[in-house]
Amino acid sequence: MFKIWCTKWVLVLTAMYTMQASAQKLSGKSLHFDGHNDFVQAPHYDALNTGNGDFTYEARIRASARQIHAYPAIVSDRNKSTENGVIVFLVPGEEAWTMGKPWININGKNYPCGECRILTNASVYALAVVRRQDTIKFYINGVLQQSRNVLPGTGKITTTGDVQIGHDQANPSMTYFRGDIAEVRIWNVARTTEEIAAFYNKTIDGNTPGLTGYWRLDEGAGQTVYNSAQNNSSAGTLGASVLLQSDDPLWAKSATVIKK
Image 1: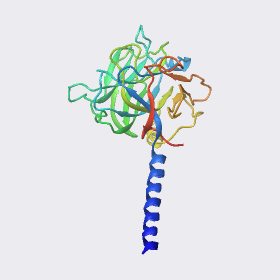
Image 2: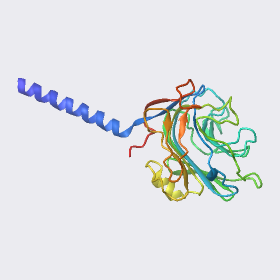
Image 3: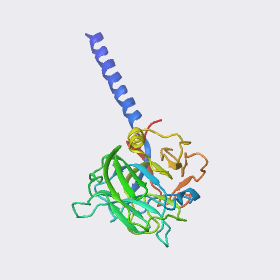
């Protein structure tokens, strides 16, 4: 009887350990943004200036259903005085066709994804927004949601803005994001539908052609987040500096992280 009892406990403990190990494989530490004043900042680099050319912005997010601000930003490189550049953000407002859905703003002009699903529900989503010539495409979890045209004459990007994650310096008081963000990728090429589907839940090699910025946000500790894109040393900081401050997001376990 004692032997059977011990055997059962061994099996239970083994099962518990296996479940815990599996959970650790699925989720590491990423950054949690409080929605009040948290952000990550990395310095501007020349490859952000795509002119009238193609680009792709990607991130994995877990957005709280209780956003505090009107336009929580996922990633932005807009110039704070001219609004030139790009911001990818959510609008958790009251209008049903846009509530909790992703938008992109190019040089001050908004392009919502009215056909996208709601992302402000504390679930993990991989979002990609692609510009190919005069067309914007929105993808969620590797699946195309909507294509729409860009207005002529509004798309030339010559930004000098820094990269901000979880905030937009061109609209500083209304864009703090509440939730988790990881795997932020900026490209100066239009990623194809097949490429996005193949890599939305996988890490990317830093030397992949067209990848200009890649902040995995999986360091798990410290004040620095590293840019994994080849030939780009623009590491970012939690908040405005390497010092511990109130505008630092916190490291926390999150399923937004992709294990290597």
